[in-house]
Image 1 (cartoon, rainbow, N blue to C red):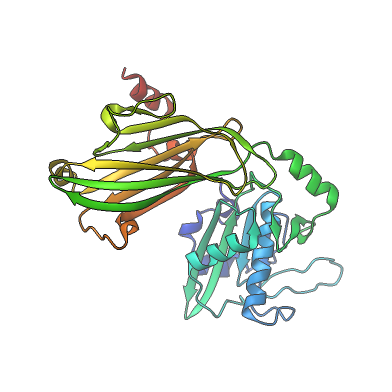
Image 2: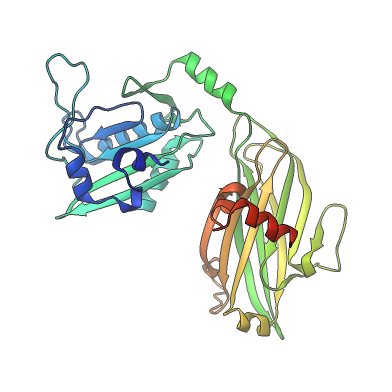
Length: 343
């Protein structure tokens, strides 16, 4: 269950401004899984400082159990007999429109290693904004915000003690791999379309090397140009040229030394016409210690732009765990097995 479901009884994307207003009708305390940030907090002077406080809270949740940040919550009130502030009554909404991509980019710039599993939801009413950020517990903790490790403890975001960081480092059991595709060139050569792409696999873990890197490219249309020409102990082509596999792309993958491979794909005009000029590309990758990952792309070859070949990418989902991609298929595990076994 998501944290939004836990606190509000609905998914984050289904939340409304009124849901948050109603939530603070009663007194609310912060916990290790939820933090309230008011926009008019007198301790934070300008917008950048306020946004930094939210990002610091995200870092703390990543290093703890995950949770929610509600930005635009009521101003915290001190109550006699209670150590922690309580939050109740009128909201203190954000006065600035913040785009999702801009915010996520800032989070990934300021938190290292770059986090995954952050969902950003904007709610608006009368030119005032609330931002609800849901944070998954990170598999790659510990994370730093501006060279400091934070955690959630006693309902507050605090610098993490040394022993806690040591425990988090011992918990990390596999490196973090990320894979990306780049379209290098596309042209029409006689009776066929020729597309050249490169893919990159990075090890984003500074302190853990990965070994025996595996990679596989699958295309829904066309065929790899080297199919039937180049089949070696290094690179294999299958599925009538629609799959290219490198069982061991690199023996050891270090931080900041990515794998880089290039492939050329040939398309016939007839098959492109039948598929509305759209092609799916899947990049699978993994290693000895890390789980299998997948980056998914949809290309459109309707309008070829030689100056900007990456404009052919019309949609993408990058760096999903393979099981996440499988979970998106609306079939039971038994049905998936029957499909694979063809019985």
